[in-house]
Image 1 (cartoon, helix red, strand yellow):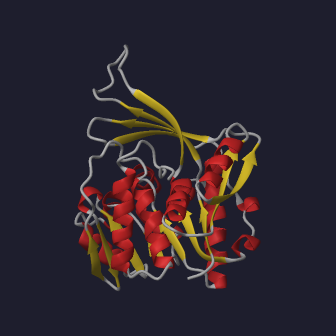
Image 2 (cartoon, rainbow, N blue to C red):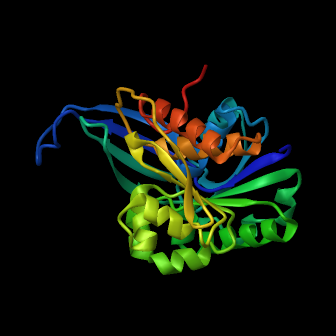
Length: 297
């Protein structure tokens, strides 16, 4: 499919802290610390570009503090930044605490990211666009939820397919599953991880959860970490994909990598199984480097 992929989401400054031992209270703990570009939306866009999508754009709100830095890194990754500069709030920042097993825990300051609002959206942003991807983070705050809802409605009116990733099991649990599902009604593709799928359905088994979700969304892809991914449509699982075995050092952004590569593959004509395999390969690559973005080649 020709045309651009437009990501509407979040661009974040990630502070990735890799520590081999648990943090020691009231004293020092040795760690490797890096400041890297991130954000679910930004990561998805960069992985889609890395996966061969020639025209990838991202709409997001950032503070003036890091705006130029993020624009430069998005362009270097092959992504066209459509960043709204916020004069009143800093760029969103996430501290990712990554332990010796590569598992990450996030401390999140949403900053400007969730201040994206209806004034930042225009239907003209859909010109030349063949697919819109919405980061689920936007649905967890009033102004950004309104902006995301406008983007979803405008895309549907023009017949442009829309995908959504729920983004955060913690925020999703606080926001409420039923409320989230109502907010994203009409999306064509849903891309949760296993925890998010369980929260959205009340079903602990990912296959059952994916099948149930596919009654409401034409295509559902559920990521399973090192176990790969599965895809459901019309109430049943239609494809499974395994993940390459790698030595993981940081699981930050693995789901975003899957989403970016999955969407790039689908837009290039891949089957659900082929897209899931492409997503799993990208996710496996993502966990071998710090942060959530692909490394340059």
